[in-house]
Image (tube, rainbow, N blue to C red; front, side, top):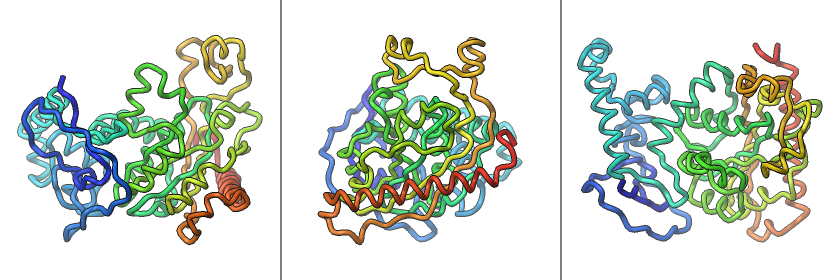
Length: 369
């Protein structure tokens, strides 16, 4: 199988999502990652989407339809321009088949692009998001609030609470930004070392745009104009007992604030309600965790007692709320070295997330409805 084409962050094609034609199996040279850059000017009528189509997400005018619907049409060649009746007939199925075969051909021949972190935008848009979307829309029935607080352009750091025993909250937050942001932005999550040593999970995480949770990688992504997501509680948050649900753990030493200050990007607090109850952790088998090399081994009312069935998450009702951004561009570059400022900003972000969690819990009618 041919290698995919590797693109740097300053390549305009990574913003316009165009895939240049090239000979099958041709490998491209890897170029060094530059510093900050400006994206291409948007053409009249909105920025280009996949395959150079106009509109908010390509092929649609902004505000009509959903991002998920458009990507399904692009993936399988069923654009609505020919009319709904035509798309529902034999011609529609032929276009879907042709689109699917073209997608497979690109995967086999390596005629697709990844960035220097391994992010595969086409695979994420057309496959990974499609796999997560039923869980997001039908199972957890996620309600999203305040997505307009995420900037339409430029870098931003989203800071969220972490919970649920298994890190589904990060994936649902990624779908929320991908499907609901009016500018069609992508969330690049910072993940723990464990993610990148697990077979299969490692490769899928890279393809989905996740990268190692270190300040250097985060700063490079932010300076390149990406939306980066971090959950500072780490394993202390996701592996806490059920009795401590929705009580934020320590946010480390404020490393995420220092990164945001250096990159000069806003911090967007994010509060997630519903994830705490999907796997109520009533115990921790520490001996088993040590043997497996895990930070914890959860015991829930259903797992491991019911076997594979007990590993299914409970169908709780989720709410994800993005708060007002906290600007950092007014601080001098040396502010990133001020421990008191980092402490104050860290505490401000943490308190805003905690206050929003309490408010959402008061408004919630039921865990499941």
